[in-house]
Length: 240
View 1 (cartoon, rainbow, N blue to C red):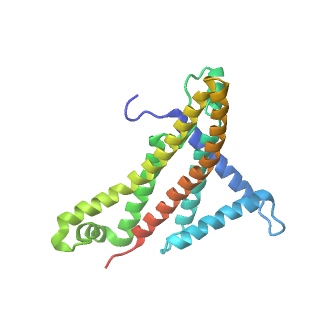
View 2: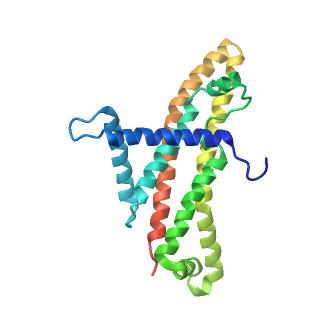
View 3: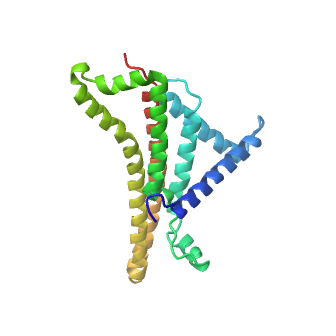
């Protein structure tokens, strides 16, 4: 396989869910009306207003990219997380019928996907940090904050760790929560093979965990979006 191997499951489901997101939002935009809106338009407008309020509250600069980026991150990650609520063996069993022996359907339970999105945000942070502050300003921020010129070695260590921790915190937080959620669903499903008493108890646990997991998948998408907005806001701020 090697370092450059492509995880077909992750790529396939994440791209398919991205296309699904674009289709429904494009459809809502095409059918938008000033008269009484339909259910899809109401839902999309509510999501857009929610994201706009989040950007307005956390981003103090001016950048037309931030709000669309935040919307894409929130909806796309939510859809990928939502795959965890589908029965754990539903798609794998369908795959077995067509000769595919192994299938994982939750892209965000794969660290390759979460690190990929986090690095995308990280590159934007670096780009806007250099664009807004200049190479000298960005380097000076790393070397001279917070202890001034005399504390340059310590500043570089602290600011370097702070910078590198951004993509790591974004990716590992999302991956850890979704991977743990997937494992809990699988462990509960094993109880079905241990008799009707444990099977019934497992069914109740499955329902309870699924209801609680709705909060987790939404919260993780919101946290990733909010941190992206905050990090980009920090990249746009000039220190004097």
